[in-house]
Amino acid sequence: MKILFVCKANVGRSQMAQAFFNNYSKDHSSISAGTQVGEHEGEKIGENPKALYVWEVMDEEGIDVRDYRRSQLNENMLRDADKVVVITNPESWPDYLKNSSKLEYWDIDDAKGTDYNFHVKSRDEVKIRVQKLLESI
Image (cartoon, rainbow, N blue to C red; front, side, top):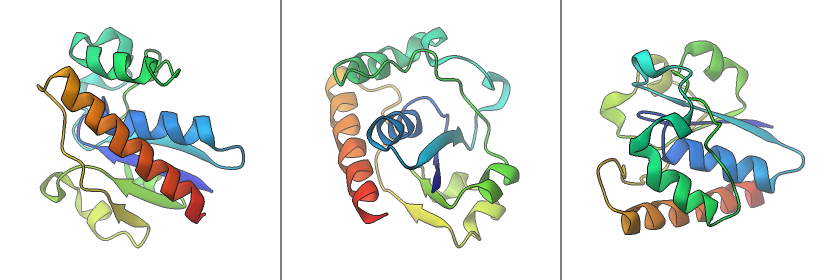
């Protein structure tokens, strides 16, 4: 099974979900994307100083995400995925995503502009949800 994790900027929540999923799963794979990546397409997470807490909290889990690259969501990604987990507010979803029968929504607050402790909380929530997802497939 191929999972697509989607958040707004493809810096935090979706990247963490992808990292946990691919780290824990031997039989399935995942990618991630953002609904509003724009000109940052292809940028490494490690090149974005605003992602410092993302690196730190994932390092604590033994997973280095610095070389993960940001991707803009497109319809082909959606088509290629067996399941799409969206972790961003519905108002930023393109129509083709809103209408997908593959969609599962996770209500996890965006950590952008927050402190280290908020990032830890987000990471832990993403981790738990990924583990439950893997148990269900």
